[in-house]
Image 1: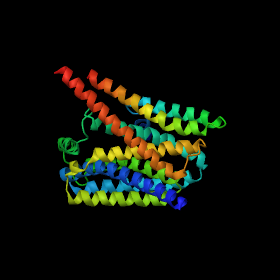
Image 2: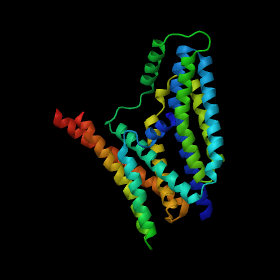
Image 3: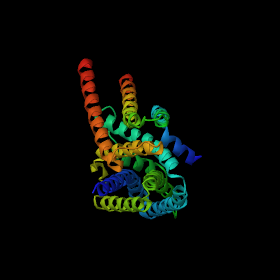
Image 4: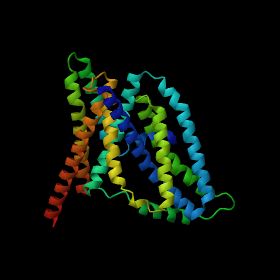
Length: 254
Length: 68
């Protein structure tokens, strides 16, 4: 019973972390693809997307098996360290945005800026090189973060196949949703998703850094749920505290 | 070159303090886990150090925001 609980909690946290990370990154990539497609035409945009997905798939194929052959303790320590940094960066940004210290990530503003940039560069004959490169870069750079998340989370948990499948599902879900709601990606609660991803990445970072350094966690994988709880409470406290100091500073300034 | 820049932005970017903090956390926990019987201390110190690192970075961001 205890084993079943610990296995399922580990899998649930892994699926959640990979799915949310992929969704957030794909929303950002989709904004760029929409801007390119609407402004310069869809053919070159889709070609750029296809080329980027091909290169990303090749990277997973090349580095996935190589990562599996690294001793698990070393892999978990390196992955744990990377996830700690990445998770703290995401959570820091999400807390600053929720407390009003940093402006929200506005997909509409990003879309408008990209459209203006694309309109400023002249139209090309035949295959649109600018559209291809813009779509390729957008999907490749955002996708590279997805690849890092899938490879690190998947290999450390010995569930690379599951992590890759979940990422595939997330990409399809975001693409279909994006196609249905057209370019209204600003309605996606991106900061809340980023906050959740930050909490999950820090949780995994803490857990695997510990495992890599031979720390024996009480309850094994079930400890992941405890760490999620700790970091969720800390995030909530961080947002509340920063909001209060912001309000006090505004009153003093007024 | 582009790949190196990606990793620089990915790991360091505009928050070098978090990169240094992660290395410090790993160093401290490595010392604790090597010491006999320090497993409980490592279990408590690991999340505590992560929270402290995040707090310091948020405090620094708040200071920068006030100056602006």
